[in-house]
Length: 114
Image (cartoon, rainbow, N blue to C red; front, top):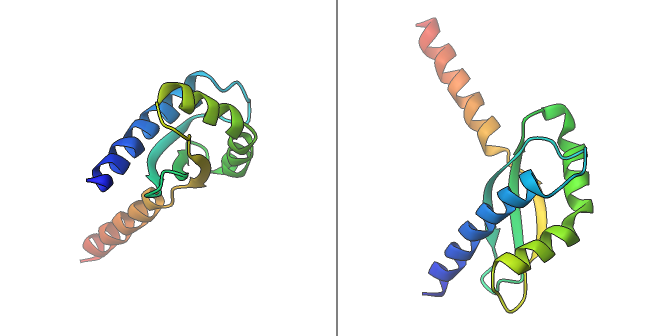
């Protein structure tokens, strides 16, 4: 039962983070960012947001900009989602899409060689 609540909160945070990052953050380092997932701990104290960035060259700059805006993002999440305590947010680059693309390229190369 509690796991269902954590999943619902994670999905709601993903939706709200996407909106906040695209519409409210004015930092020029934060370009086109997609929130691919959010993991929330069972006690709702910490959340990890996984992001992808359109340009792979600016990933570190984007992370730096998001980390600078953590306080603002957390306060916005607190206003939008009613929780006793808003989770501490950390951002990480989502490597799964790049990994999946690499596997697809390898499979394509194998089938193309045959």
